Image (cartoon, rainbow, N blue to C red; front, side):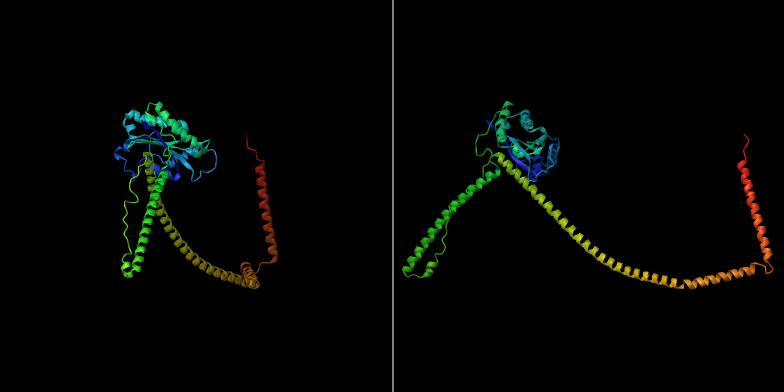
Length: 406
């Protein structure tokens, strides 16, 4: 009987882009030789009908449910990804309808458990050696992102117990993994660390053995040198024995392969893809940094040019201020001169005016024109003017008293 496999891994914000590339096959993988590109068209997503931006989708799920105003921490767990699968022989015995039913029922179980609104993706991969599904759960509860509370120790135990039971009820011949096994929840990093520790211990034991052999040989050499000295032989003959070759039997590492479970291998491949994406992002950031440095240099040059122009403007401004001071002083001097000449100009104007009046009187008035005639003419002028005014008054009075016929 095959085992039901359901493993959980935490994903932070910087992990999502790499997982997106892997799940949606957005980039050609250079680290996963198991992907058969000719079969990638068989992959599908039970949540999304087309490729999505994982970071954007996850943020939408969080913002639609978040109740507080506090910002999400940069190192917060954004997604708890569940890997659903079994061994290859299990899937080989399923027809296409049962194959799809296995993943649909798995998705249904966890969507009901954690809320369909919190499932960011449910991607099924049929283009690798063993079919499997990645379910991305955004750990939202009570308006907060709280992975530690949603996927605590009791919840992980529930997954390991209930997932096999649920699949058995749906007619699948699966059993739970061995309870209490050290490898049941052993993460890839822990497994690698454990393997490396074992290799280090082996190397240290071999090294100690070689050091003991070396000390024994050195003691033997000293013993031979002492005997030769006692016999009076030349030390030159002894110096020929200054190196002793030690042949090692076998190597420090006797196997170049490590056997790990399929799920751990999948996690290693995912980490490798994430690392590849991070290298690409780092290169992109380096290019942006170089561009910013160039812009900084251009701005520095523009600043220097503006500084030079500012100095020129300051010089021109100083010159204009001097010219303005000169014009002010000139205007003040003109005012002073004008005020000094006003009395003289007034006398000249009075003289010209008097001269003009005298000339006009001599030329316009006849010399025989007497004073009586002046009085008579003035009186006639006044009488005519009075008649004209009276005539105007009479005309206006008639106009006021006039009433038209009805």
